[in-house]
Amino acid sequence: MRTVNSACIFAATLIACCCNDLVSADESAKKKRPNILFVIVDDQSPFDLKIYNAKSELETPNIDRLAAEGVTLDGAYQMGSFSGAVCTPSRHMVMTGRTVWHLPISPGQKTCPKNIEDNVMASVFNNAGYDTMRTCKNGNSYAAANARFTVVKDATKRGGTEESGSAWHGKQVLDYLDQRQMTKDEDPFLIYFGFSHPHDTRDGTPDLLTKYGAANHTDKENLPAANPKQPALPVNYLAQHPFHHGHPGLRDEVAVSGVWEKRDERTIRNELGREFACSENIDIQLGKVLARLKNMGELDNTYVVYTSDHGMAIGRHGLQGKQNLYQHTWRVPFIVRGPGIKPGTRATGNVYLLDVLSTICDLTGIAAPETSEGTSFKHVLWGETDAVRDTLFGVYNGGTKPGMRCVKKGDWKLIKYDVMNGSVRETQLFNLAENPNEFISEHNKEDAKLTDLAEDPAYAGKLAEMEALLLEEMRRLDDPYRLWNQPDDGLPAQVEVVKPKRNLRGKAKKPQPNS
Ligand SMILES: [Ca+2]
Ligand SMILES: [Ca+2]
Image (cartoon, rainbow, N blue to C red; front, side, top):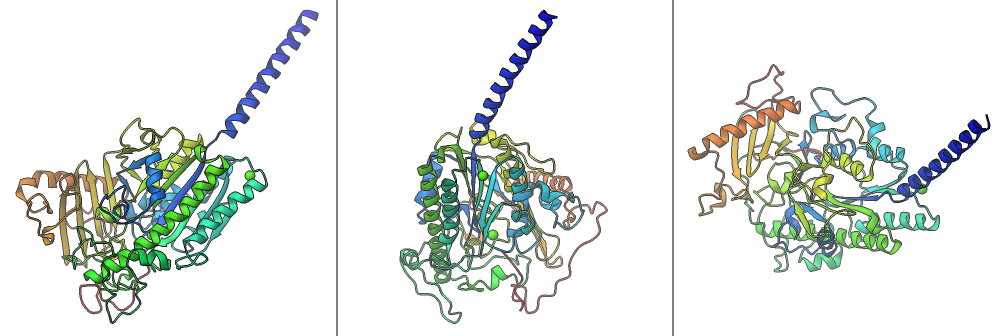
């Protein structure tokens, strides 16, 4: 018996020691769990940033430094929208990790689980013991998911002062970090650092407007003053898009203050100056938060993600808004700095914003919720692989149905338009390696490669291949619509009859909601 007792005591001691070891290992692992600072701006084209477009005149030293210390993805996209308010599905995809036709607000098949709000970004991180905080604009978002953050400081701030502009969002994060320091809070954190700009109205601060030669133009009858300090016109600027974009009366294309339906050089350069003034102000606020994290000793244990909810046209291709599928608008900027990421690296990625949830879960050792359809791209960030997928799909059909679709594989991209009750049926085929700006015949480039190749018989085979790929993606993702040259697959016809109030260039009287 004595022997047995001794053995028992020895075993118990051993187990206790092991448990202690496990507890302390677990505690130190917990302490080391990385923080997440997710920065998302509202309406910014990647081509505005020097890191994506060396010729851009926008100065963003803090974003540039973030890229120099982290990884920049050249292939980051938002899957699209079935609403003029492109923000809204984009932010639902970020929060849930679900694809565009599987969101709680998607038309068509209702495949979104009822408990989805228990599985959105903040819920997942709260359950894993993270502190969660957000600041962002109000509206055109996902209120039920936003409310899951423990600390919520939301307000729409699109003015030109500290209190009414981007500095307000920065202050919410700085105050939150102060609070954590005061209470010696050691829990890891997820901060969703959103901005209301550079979304219009683009009322920049006076000094930054001056820097970019722009004015907060409100006089619809006259053009803003020309100013040599304004940014140059974008390379793929057009005075008008060659065919109707398919969304009559769309607010972004007809009613943005300072632009309205104008596409002349003075209007567009002034508006770009305003956009840059707002984007540089965001950069300044980001710089303050990064400096604070460094000062707190938290920066090197934080994954800092910088992106936008979608891109933006502002004169590119004769368009003004975010309701198109050209690269300037379908693509988003995407830069990440943090543990394990090699400074100054680039990767293709081929990621969607809906992959963010799976990825930040993977980076922090949290199991992604089963409801997420995203793919973690951690190994892309760490430089172990270049991309997570080959084929990318995009949709815009917030106006007339079935709308626009695009598919991209390798260097090739197909965009199709089936809008205005069948009166606009257009196909574009681009080789993005040769024609990254998606020049079309209206840009009048001498180089035969710098145009849309859909009509060129030499590319008929490639066109057929891309058409087949598009149909495959639409079926795979449960797209509830089909285009004119696709089989109907037994889906109900959902073509919306639209009667433009005045003409086909989008002059209906009532602007549609957007964002
Ligand atoms: Ca937006
Ligand atoms: Ca805490």
